[in-house]
Length: 95
Image (cartoon, rainbow, N blue to C red; front, top):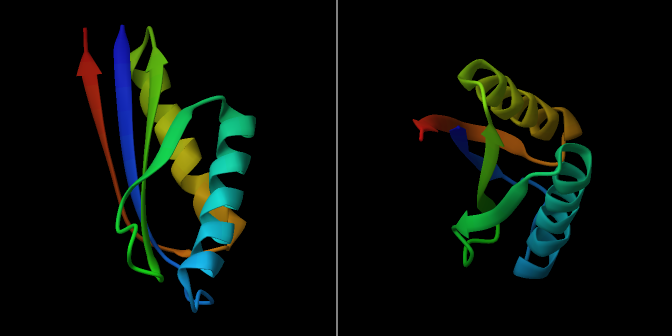
């Protein structure tokens, strides 16, 4: 079993308040969860209204497949054009 962990840091240019940020984050989380059936949450920068760090996890029986899923999520979030991707990191854990 392979657990893939992804972390993506976003800069939300159009956000001028925490309320506006929450709308964008909620949209990204909802779209990713429904499209990929993954666990995803905001994990850092909750008090900064233009920064957002999202963490997510995938599980697979193959490391290549888990890495492909993570990279697909990264590409999907970037393709939404709701925020600028500042950083993205991933890690695979073998059990």
